[in-house]
Image (tube, rainbow, N blue to C red):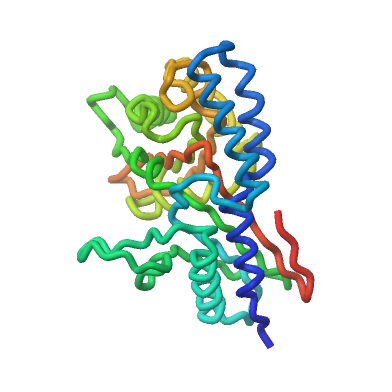
Length: 291
């Protein structure tokens, strides 16, 4: 019989909302030393790090914008996805009651908040993928509204930027997205980039790639080199933490290459703020582990 994982998923939500992953915190701590002593940029990063410590100690949300919950569920054959989704929704409602999450689900037509972070069939966002083996994996990302607002999608060629249908053109539009974001995306940020797909799948791809750990590079050497270059060049724009200027605008870039139709060449950029909240849980028999 399929187990009831509601309480385990509640713990996943708590950890994601209140405890920033170690790889993200390490990058932020390393960034402090790159900013001038006494500068607004360094002060912003120091405040961010204090906030991370307090949130972890008190089990309170890292950011007042607890974000859109995006779940990716990789399930073994035979699991009933309808039941898993019901458990995810029940856990999210309970997490909201416990104040790990703010009630953020607002009906866009009637401007009414549901009060429990649930809205129709599409809030939270839940994606299912059947996999081989016996292990169930649930990944969760909390995507803040501020950084979501500065995401961008481009259709190449883009004559305004002189960007053609190649990786050089991709580089131009991604840097344009960072320049336009300025401090509004709560920098330092992480860039998720999808090259190809249609308008919808391209945006999904740019978010999916953000589940990867910082520092891991694309297996394609061309895309791996572009990831490194984009991070380096974004940090020469002088935007800095929270837009205060400085050396740290982006702490990593992740790229996903996708197929496309000949008529279309989309590049989608999902900007993730410093509150890079993503964790996962794995279930194997009666063993549950969190990462």
